[in-house]
Image (cartoon, rainbow, N blue to C red; front, top):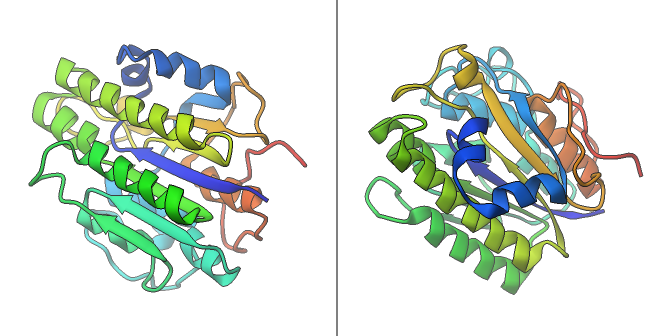
Length: 259
């Protein structure tokens, strides 16, 4: 059974990742299994995508189709609820307030929110805070969410603009710091929720729907290219790594190598 750090870089397109210029980007593809062609859900919008990531069902099932949270008509346990049911300790560090709804009340032992729209460099500050907590408390699962690539990169300046690539570069440097500090103790998963085009996203265009994912840990073959990956596979993979059962309604599959 492993401990896991999940890092979500909002709005990171695969070609943005490849062109951001950070040397650790290439290293990530050598360290673990990865895909540059994973599919997110429709609509390719932040809250629906993250709800699907953490609950392994499409928006048609969880009912959230915009960035406004609505309680599920037929509730099901997401990753945080399943972890709590099996006495795992979870932490969450995030820069966009609506994301709090991916975890039900009382499922988080540690959590910090910083308003990325009111402060600068929140991705780096949240990474610092998450790393401090990991050193101090060793939570079983840590979710680190970085929003600046989406908002200050894509929406403010356009996807694939230089400011957008600079935001990815900064986010990958935060991934590097987490890996160098905790890669021996934790499996590290890096994902995007959606891509983008021009200064927007939410459509079924490939630029919006295609995301990169990276799985770095002992249950993954270094350098392996994963096929037919969906964002719905993320939570079943984490549950498998952490030795807890999948919720019966989850639609994804584990991507981890068999034990």
